[in-house]
Amino acid sequence: MKIATWNVNSVRTRLEHVTNWLLANPVEVLCLQETKVIDADFPRSPFTELGYHPAVCGQKSYNGVAILSRLPLEEVTVGFTPQLGEATVGEFDVQKRLISATVAGVRVISVYIPNGADYGSEKYLYKLHWLKLLREYLQRTLKDYPDLCICGDYNIAPDDRDIHFTTEPNRPVTGTTEVERQAFKDLLALGLGDAFRKFNAEAEQYSWWDYRAAAFRRNLGWRIDHHLLSHPLYEKAIACTIDVTPRQWTKPSDHTPVVVEF
DNA sequence: ATGGCCCGTAATACGGGA
Image (spheres, chains in turn purple, orange):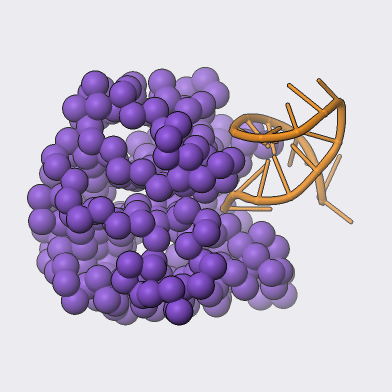
């Protein structure tokens, strides 16, 4: 079984890329982020024609996540509220950043963690609070689902191997700060493993490259798209690879797919 | 280089992205 994750930066603009990639890479599950479309306008038929059932959670213009699956999707839930309750979540489900479904006994979560904008900004603090809610959500979920795969755009480079520059303590860059990296480690401490790092300890293995400054050609990227696996699944994983091919296509997403195999 | 590019929405600019 293969589960892929891909921030497509608008599913409608990238529709041909996604369907072509699925034809060449018929994974069982594809988690999407930044679909940027309300549920009523999500392009379902191009995916159902390829044999994928879509579960979607989107909004106008921004954010939006989805899970496409060849196998039946069960127990679909959107946002934090079903698990954590309105009193805890408040307004944090207004932005559509999380969808969960059970596929062949595996609880699959497609997640788009907030970008965070500038270090210390209001959006940075929003990101930190969102990460706190995610930790609580995963802690609850692990109690019910021992086989858990949380994949998506985390907007966190876990360590300096995952970025093309050197961090400096007096120049905090969002996505690389100690507080964010600690929040990522706090997720791992729940009993999760970074699937990619089970197989590859090398630096310069990126999943995102800025559109500007020919960053992809120069391999000036970040590794911010991850699969976190509960220990039973982590042990079963036999490969985790970054497929840079779609990033080479005309008018690409700035992210490229990452695939884990069990 | 506090830049560059690309998205959707709106509209011939803007916020957002990381």
